[in-house]
Image 1 (cartoon, rainbow, N blue to C red):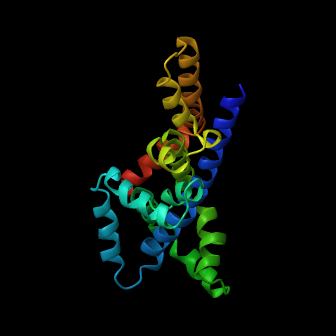
Image 2 (image 1 turned 180 degrees about the vertical axis):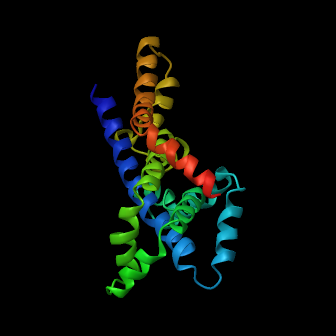
Image 3 (image 1 turned 120 degrees about the horizontal axis):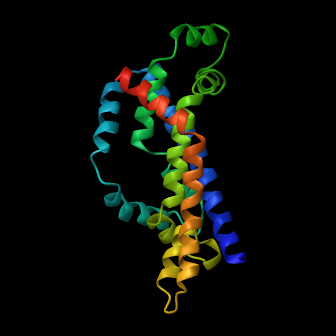
Length: 212
């Protein structure tokens, strides 16, 4: 139906922006912690790891307040940026970058590349395995996220699949067949994505475990 197509389009926009932000922003911080290693990077890395102990839900209230203060309601930007600050992604990037040959990084600097050019033209192309893993995590998280999209995207035409599924389940008259169809439709994309990239996901998990 048209409603399902609209919800899917909104979810797709959220997913695409979230993956891009997850790769760029977390990758840049991982690049700093894993390759550049400036003065004080160990303290920053400890803070990043410490943030893993904090439940995500405790940041929802201050995050929502800041979104309202910046007048970013009914916008995809807060959803995208929220995936650009994920401690787990930063640690995964940093661990992978540490395994890259230092000679390649030094060669790029000798050729006149600055840090950003080295990151985008040298490091990222060599990091396709970890980028694939991060992309899978980001797609799954963005597609299945309910709380933040329900707070930020208020319009009926801007509801993601998960938000629409919740609204549909709270209606007074719910058709069981339509409900089951909606649930299956919401579950299928992440499952398909996992089976497509299952090999890359397991191989990277093993390699990270060995390096650790």
